[in-house]
Image 1 (cartoon, rainbow, N blue to C red):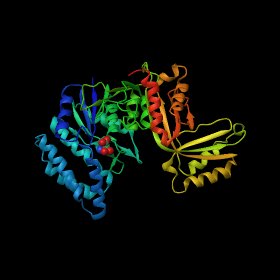
Image 2: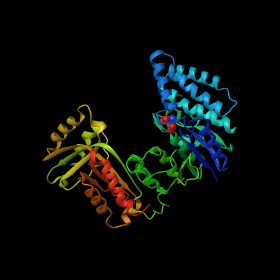
Image 3: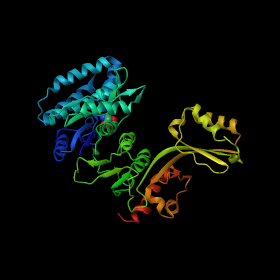
Image 4: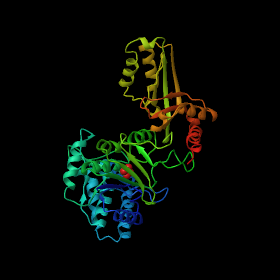
Length: 441
Ligand code: ASP
């Protein structure tokens, strides 16, 4: 049995939390390969070390040298090593790192040092080999080179019973350090799990798994015991940010289950994420609810649109020309809508697109609905039960909210409703009450 364990920033925040990590690792000999994040926040209002490294990179850019942020970084690592009573020369390591950041000059390199240093510390604490992620995680042409990285991970860890791998970064074809997007140590963990063919990928964080909806909207929502990869993908994409959305692919392809666990409550069951094919949905109709605000809907109406071949291509080409991606494209017999993240439409882009659509398709109606929130109601259980969509819509109607859009994807997994931004929280509460309040916790 091989488990790969990834520990997030709050687990690596200080000597006490790292002590917890060590106990968790000692409790199960299958926990063999460890991926770590940089030290995160110790308390609310604290600054993540990664953010300090980005500031340090900025200081180098402006003045050629690191400034006050690097002193804060040093203080974090020095106190951490002292708390752990570790015998490594952290002062020398920090000096070396400072010189390397100033020499390299890139933000990616500076940011990667957070994980590099916490990896070195963790490896020293456990007395196991340290694997520098630049040797095993590779990028090519700006993109993550999955196959090559899996092979390099496998080769680097072959014959090592245990090892620590730094999360978040790798190396590109020019030998420069490159990071994943923020929160990317989750991806490194998944890549290592895939590379060694792990039986399970444990992702240790500061919550006991996924909750059925955002706890800032519904106080203490129920936890989700199990999810399929597909459900996870839908929920993460729509804002349930327990796990980096891209961390799913490497393990999903290999059918490796993920378990989300809480470093601060290791006894909790957490959430187990399993391959969709082997997944047996729970009794619940809905597995989870997620959502995001600030979308724009472009609505096009033209009689007999359905009979014109290639009609949809024209607006799609316009969006492509402006480099705009859309989230959904609900359509009717004579209507077609695009739901687009509003961030992409600033600076006059929306007006340009509308003018071009008008010109290209001469619609009878071309409407724009601004400030839309999307709510995704996700669960394999939904389609086995009659009347789910009806229940969902009546719950929102009972809350006095007008549904502006519905998209029931054919994936048989989710229903997306669009409501005005201002009705977002109210709608989520209503949907939660309908599916979780009534069905019991
Ligand atoms: N330290 C990086 C960040 O703050 C990556 C991670 O923690 O996963 O985004």
